[in-house]
Amino acid sequence: MQAEPKKSLVGDEYEVEIGPVAHGGHCIARTAEGQVLFVRHALPGERVRARVTEGEEGARFLRADAVEILDASKDRIEAPCPFAGPGRCGGCDWQHAKPGAQRRLKGEVIAEQLQRLAGLTPEEAGWDGTVMPAEGDKLPAGQVPQWRTRVQYAVDAEGHAGLRRHRSHEVERIDHCMIAAAGVSELGIEKRDWTGMESVEAIAATGSQDRQVILTPRPGARLPLVELDRPVSVLRVGEKDGGVHRVHGRPFVRERADDHTYRVGNGGFWQVHPKAADTLVTAVMQGLLPRKGETALDLYCGVGLFAGALADRLGEQGAVLGIESGKRSVEDARHNLADFPRVRIEQGKVESVLPRTGITEADLIVLDPPRAGAGRTTVAHLTALGARRIAYVACDPAALARDLAYFRDGGYRVRTLRAFDLFPMTHHVECVAVLEPVTKGV
Image (cartoon, rainbow, N blue to C red; front, top):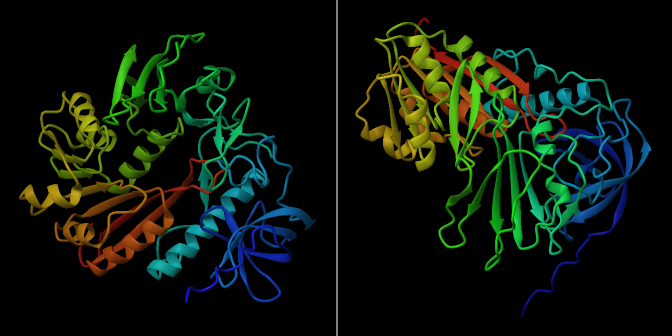
């Protein structure tokens, strides 16, 4: 006998007190019956009317939107973006919070993840608890920094470009994205007809005038004629192979960081905030303090940002090995670092390639893993190499905290941790943790 389906609670409303912030851009509340709600568009300490957006009877938790603010926080402002709010664009989480409050909330999330997943207090992690704004982003409440140099627009059935709604495939039509960098906005993606396209990605390189549009067509659709007001290269995602192919112009953009120019091809990874690459290189190098002649690893190296910075500082007698899984990124990294004969780039997953290299020791290690983190096996391999310092660049505080616990098991402690608000208006935050062996001097 089949069990009856559980009753959906979507649309039900509760008047609740909002508790602490949680990882993911929402806050925690409980109904009078004790049911946990993850509430978006709210702030700690508020009283709101929350409408359930996901969940059913008996669920461990429900997701909800704050649809009416009954008692507002002093940190609340009216969202500057007309497309933000319950049921609207899902790109920004904290449009309704003052900039300083956004950074405090991110700091609270980092602290909670460190304590819960790594058993570390901020003091034990060498962190003062602050999240630093990027240069130029410290703006008054109500002003939005234009920082996003790469924006992926979704396209609806009528050919209008927009952004996805939160946890939905539905497209919120927009006429302008407030966090988009000026170079992206100048392309006017929102004003064109993109019939037949699944998505349109716009890229405005930092430090050059390179602009790029990457089109993902729906099956069988023809590419539109892309004529924009400024020079722009056009690429397309292949319907059969999923690869990215040149249609017009260069297949790459040129990004600038740490006094070097980096080629980034086919929409490959580069930090989205225009100040992010320089900010992170500075934090990593200040943490590692490279010495002439040392050996270093750059894991998940992308197009070679940290490998290039290390090679510069280690000198002619130093050596750097970079490992990256993306074939095109490896090609770009080898091109970008061709002037450094003591830099080698290997292609493949770190957990597979690193054991095959035969490397048994290294002086310095940088790792910038994807959102899921490096994982126990890779961390165990790294701790066995005896590096005097390790710099971990993390875009997810939960993954960072999990991996810091693995590093502790391998005999490493956190020397310093710094946090940077490189994604204003969203819940995302970037951290740089510098680790050292517990039993060795530095």
